[in-house]
Image 1 (cartoon, rainbow, N blue to C red):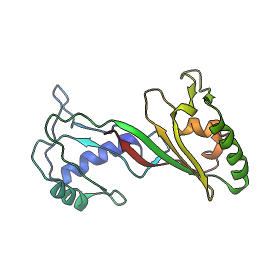
Image 2: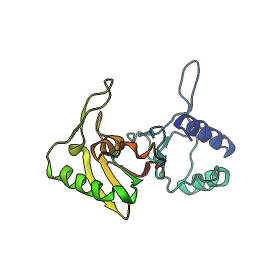
Image 3: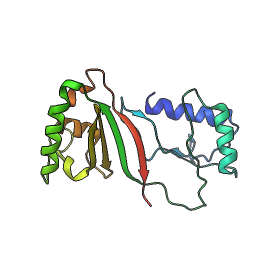
Length: 190
């Protein structure tokens, strides 16, 4: 499901659950809901964060019960937190990803990861529309175990993404071969 489809699905879910949403002002009011870190096309999300403004008071348990009753198959709310009025929007600290690496490429990937950790900088050149990025400074964790490459990236504007790390490890072609990136965790600041 693409990001826009997910947003529309969530709007429908809230209507089915009978929730009154806070709306933006203007000629075309829209529900006040956002994803602090929307997923890129083709990446599966297992642990996403969404912020929503309600126009009614509701406890986290009551909200979870109402949403779970009307959720699409496969959509589950792991936790719900009701924030006090005036609370700042969520800020992402880091995101974690994983992808399967074929057995015949694991030794090469392990070697390349060793080279990667031994440097202080590893610049990946992106296409001409986006600036080059230093993957080494944004990567907090990188492991390859039983054919599963896992990584945790520090979140910052213009920072490295999971596909940049794959490029640094000479694994850019994995998605073309049918493997898919999965975002497994989104960690919020403070």
